Structure formats: structure tokens, C-alpha cells
Image (cartoon, rainbow over all chains, first blue to last red; front, side, top):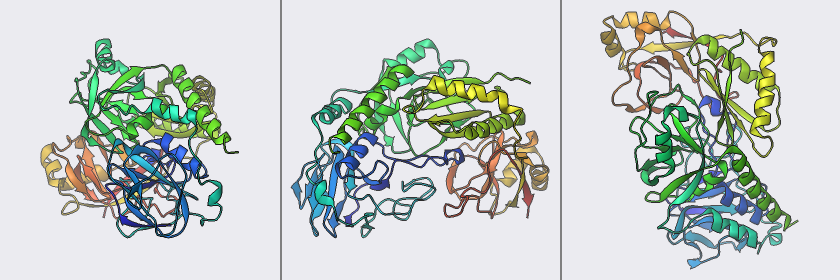
Amino acid sequence: MFKVIEPGLFSTIQDIGRFHYRKFGVGAGGPMDIFSFRIGNILVGNKNDESSLEVTVFGPKLMALEDTAIAITGGDLGFTINDKYAPMWEAIKLDKGDLLGFKGLRKGCRAYISIFGGIDVPKVMGSQSYSSRYRIGGIGGRPLIKGDVIKSRVSGIGIEKFIGRKISKEICSKIEEIYSWHEKEATVLRVIVGPFEDHFSTHAIKKFLNSEYIITRNADRMGYRLEGPQIKHNFKGPDIISIGLVPGAIQVPGNHKPIIFLHEGAFGGYPLIATIISTDLCKIGQLKPGDKIKFNEVNIRQARSIKEEYENEIKSFIQCFL
Amino acid sequence: MNKQIKYTIFGDTGILIKFDEKLSEVNSRMAVNFSQLIRKENIEGFIEAQVSYNSIVVHYDPLKIGSSVLIMKMRKTEAKINEIELPRPRVYDIPTLYGGEYGPDLEYVAEYHGITPEEVIGIHTKEPLWLYRFIQNIVPAKLITPRREVPRLKVPAGSVGIGDKQTGVYPIDSSAGWNIIGRTPLKLYDPQRDPPFLFEIGNYVHYRST
């Protein structure tokens, strides 16, 4: 159980997502960096679908109101305990009265605070995830504010079993592989071309796949707008009859600048030139305005093997503790 | 009547199913019926079907089913489109307060078409309109009005509007590019209610002036 001393820039409760309501326009939500989210839950012994706190750029300051275990995963926001830097990617014990904080962003963009037992907030339409558009989920349908009390679903009994859990060497290499923490290089996002590639010439698609884009300040859980080489439509033009969207779908509206559709929306009406593979969505969770990206084409078979490979790594990691 | 149904890969977790390019009630109905059929099949790995106008986006878990197997299973289901007994579409009334503070653009829409606001209301409420999406209909041709050049930053939930060929209701407070002609007191969306959304596509709505 925690008391929110400072809420941080944008801290929300996320579980794996709200499915079955996208047809009504409610985006699935869920973690922007699901890889880090899952590792966090494994470290504190939580089930895959327990909710965690997703914190953005400036993390919150929380006071532990009872003994508990937590793990911090994802980007490096400068995690501290009682104002001293503390390790990430590890299950750590907090004593009642300890202060969990963040001194400042060093790498990435978002981090996950996984709490032993998960977070106790009601499910709304099947999920605890906060939805910005519909203002549901989380604590009272909003991000954290000062004074909030974050309850976990179970008490601190049994935490000893998880204290000290660390990530394996294999997971460590996966982390290196997934996140390019180098500021100078562009992050590669793998895409499957389409489903509206027929709105673009082969030349335009080639241009898109060979260009570098920068994330603009208009970047949030709804979508990331990009700055870079314009992609012009062919005779079919910039409009389509609106369709349901998959997170990672890249729309090109009338101004010819691509927009990556993410987790908070559900429908879109601009031609989709390509779609980022689901396994690479977690990289976007760690990208922020000013970061550079590039797109590499893969096919569905390759996308599937990539996904299976990651899933096997995570499964093996879970096995370590059984 | 065997229309060609197209299946397209949509990233690695989606399949886009497209019916005829033409926007029509018939195509929309087919899409709704087909999505209900697919749901009933309980295919392992199927997560959700999102119908919009004449298309369906099927969301699936690629770790549980491959795209080609999923497409094959859905193709097999096509044969059932004519077999299955589906619930008849219902007509839902949407009581609407037109004009004044509830419909700041009603006069503009009337002017644009060279008719009176009463005539606009008359056309808008004349017949039940098919729900192509939640909550969107195709507006009668006489009321097709271009979207506002500058969208309003916020319109209240329940606002009824017209944007180009579409008309509909904003279920939540939203920024809006449509011309707002009225407001409904109906709570179309309530997260605490079961079901949270008052009605589903595959039905009609009938705007009624109150």
C-alpha cells in the first residue's frame, strides 16, 4: 500500500488491456511497453494480467504504508529508495515508511512499478486500465494525483519468496536487443506493409522504408506524430472509410506526415501504409519527442517467429522460478 | 448472391475483412452478420471483431492461431451467411432537442441548404437510419454538410451532429468537427451500466424531436 506524495508527470494504472469494447470506440489501452510490464510482474510473483503503475518521464514519489515488494522495469527514470539510487529489474523489499522516488530521466521514457499482489482498483468494462478518452479505470478514471492511496490486492504476507529475484542473462540480452538506448542512432521498428499500400506508389513506400523520422511533441498513448520526409498518396487519395485499427498502424493523413496509432483510440480514417509488428510496440513505449526512428519491412511469417522467440524467452524466464 | 469478401493481413495481430467497396446498408448488414457468425464460431485465438461500415477488423492472438489458418476458418464460415437465423434489427429512438443552445449549428446547416431549421429537423427525423458504427449513420442526401473547418475543442456527450455524409451522436465529451444540430438526453454510454453501451450496430436509430 502506498500514499502518493507527488504524482509525477503522468502516472496511470495499466493491466494488460480492455478488449471487447473496441467496436464501440473504446481503445484497448494497456502498457505502452508490455515487455517491461511483464518482466516486472514476473519479478514480484504476480500473474501476467495484474496491473502495475506506468510512469512517464518524471516518476512519482510514493511512501510505503506497509512492508511490500516492488520491481521497477522499463526506462531509467532514476529510481531511488529514500533518495538513494536503487537497482531496477529486481524484486526489492520496501519497509513501511520507505520513500520510492525518481531523480530524473536517464534512458527511455516510461517505467513500470510492479507491486506484489497487483493493484486493487475496480475493473471497468473488464479492465483496470486507465483510459484517457473515456476517463475510466485506474483510481477514479484519472491519472494519479497527490494524496491518492494505492492499495495492493493482497497484504505483504509471502513477499520473502520473491525478494531478490533478478532478471536472467537471457532477459538481460533481450533488453539490450530491444531498446536502443543510444541517443544518436535511430530505433528500428519492424513493419508489415499495408493494409492500404494501394493508396501509395511503390516509390512512396520505398521512400517511407528508407527514411528516418523524428518523434514530435505530439506523442502520447493515443498516437505518435512524426516529422520527416512527406509521403504522398497516389490517385486514391488521403481518405478511407474508417476502419478498426490495430495498435502500431501507421496512418498517413492529408498533410503527408505519418502518425503511429497506439493504444487509446479504436478507429481511423486515413490510409495505412504499414503496421508495426506487435513485438516492437514495446520499443515505442521507450521513445519520446526528439527520438529518431526507421522502419524495416518484414513479412507475417517473420513477425510470427519474432513473437514466438520473445514469448519463449519470457516462458523460460518464468521457469527459472518454478 | 455471392459477393467477393477480401481478407487482408493487418499487422501481425489483425485481419481486415472487406466487403464491396460501395457504402450501403446491404454491405454493412453483411459485415455485421458475418462478424456475429465469426464470434459464434469460438475460434481459438480470436479476440474481437470490430465492424465499421463495410469492413471488419478481426483482432487475434498470433501465438494461438496463424493468420492463414484463421482466414481459412473464416472463409469456411462464409457459407453460413445465408443459413443462419440472426436477430432482426431493432429501431432505437433517440429523443433529440434540436437547435438553440443544444444545436448551435442548426441554423448554419439550414442556411447551407437553403431550407428552414424546421425542414432540417423534418428530414433528420423522417426515417430510421441504419447504424454503421457506434453511433454513426449515413445522413439523408439533402443534409450532407461539410465538416467544420475548425473543429470545436469540446462538445458535450449526447451531441447530435452532421459531418459530410455522416450523422451521429458523440457518446462522450469530445472535440468535434461535425455541425452540431441538437442533443439527446439519453445516456448512450455509462461505464457502470450493464451493458455500458446502449445499443449495437446492426440496428436502426430514429431521431425524434422532443
